[in-house]
Length: 517
Image: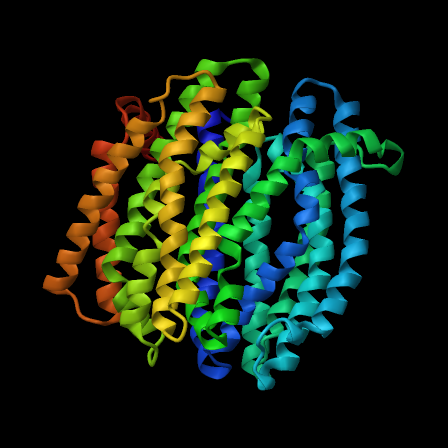
């Protein structure tokens, strides 16, 4: 039985949230253990390893970023042969790139202490982590192509279920190794390889079940199709490079300009915002299949409705993490990482999260440029902001040289402020332009959401000051209070009447079904 679009969207959103919650749980429980047994500087190398490997994968961004668009549109048009040519070309090109890059990354890992400040006691651990993560990258590249079947059929919950199982598997491996053996950082790399193998195998099965019309064969590999993907995604490559300049270099800059310990502090501060941003990015990915379908059919009215719905729904969720982070992060750090400077971590995370208020509700709008194949202007704008960011950060680090705390504040503040400016200027205006919508189309839901965030944040801080102490029970109580308040305010100020009627209808329908049973 075919599910309705709203029901499928709800299932996709819930499964995505659960998948990321599993990842959050692993980070939550293991971070204090790693910091206390290996050191805060060791924890920083975990984020740095993923960042550096991400830099080397830039070459595949141009190829993979537009694959979903081309394959999905050809699939929905019923042109399965062309869709097979696109996916086969991407798969074999990814395989070639991985075989080329893995040896290069291995050589870099052996000599990486020339470029990065690694404490002597962590040298073997850090290099072992890098080598294992490099090997897991080989499997991840293959999965890029075959995982597209869940996107095409709008069955993202199936991919999310594999993500949940993968997170459980990763947690089991890490808990077992850290409990039974001497703690080492490279256990994270070992867990990554096992999980990559698992997801590769299971995504192959999903691909064969969901899209049997498509075929990945070497005879379908076409240089012209690969070039078409690369040409269309070239501007996305520039965007990804801009993201690295804008955000991904933070840990490396902290390591070079301040030191390994400062990098560890920054890694902890960035962990929670990055998880929140990752959750919202994944949640917004659930809207994309519907966007592609509506755009392929030329239903611009329906597309506008879906885009506005995504802003309202993401706005509903935005106030929850922001109010909790602003209100209770000092309590959280004091009980989560005793012995660390919780007040410093609190101030740094507050600054780091300023931009989230503007970015999170609009997260799904970025897909407009991929959908319409108009990523050029977006990429140019991003490189402009990224260049300004990196210049200001380096100047700030040079100016504050010798003052580690001031340097950390520079790293946390410049990017988030400039990012917020970009989110409220370029994104809604140019997004509306390429779709021929009114300039003001995407602003009203954001304004409503900012009101909710402000009220929920002020109320959370007052609630903490008046009633809470530094304990886990107080943190849970405060989080529950802020969640209820944020959801209630969002229901009043963010959701439209049609949204409210839909929610009421679902509740009434579910209640009636339960009563009849």
